[in-house]
Image (cartoon, rainbow, N blue to C red; front, side):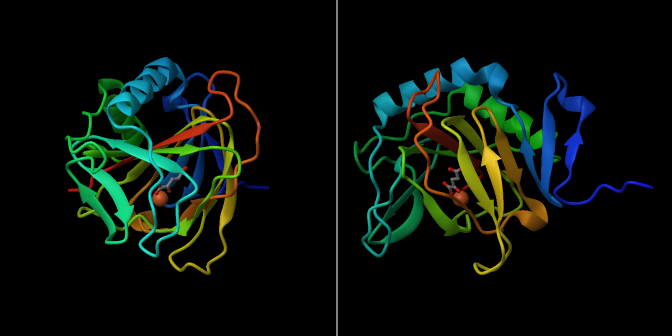
Length: 223
Ligand SMILES: O=C(O)CCC(=O)C(=O)O
Ligand SMILES: [Fe+2]
């Protein structure tokens, strides 16, 4: 019987090499399995350096509720949330200084992952760092505070595993559950750029290198 490839099939992709695969989540949406593994130490060093200059903090939703993740940013613009709403700002409100620059390893990985998913020429100007402890989650939302919807989202997972929810264009659309492991990179753009997505509450499954934490690096073209 003839086999056809459709959405949600796992695909081996020669160009990624090393037995790494990619999983299709939509027409323009992929999980690149283990794509960040060769760069893990540089990425973790980058996270450490950024968080020394721009410490993690718990932001509040515009409605006043504390988010369960702690966050920081690097790059020209940083995403913040408070009573005034969600927006990008050039200065860290906590320190009054510019956000730390994107570490070179961050920028290169984001560019290469975007290209591997079919988005050539991605130059991120914002990297949101989310730190999840056990029980932390992110409810279904769209990333829609960016000016340039032509650029994809590149999202890197480090540390404890998480279940990613990838839904449709309406909040009530059924969401697929996709495990995201240490080193996986999710990329979505094009017709999938505004799909609802989120993270289920994290289970306490300590990671041998990173411990009882998950870091998510979300690269965007914000300005
Ligand atoms: O933690 C993740 O994998 C997703 C984070 C996310 O969707 C966001 O920060 O907008
Ligand atoms: Fe998001």
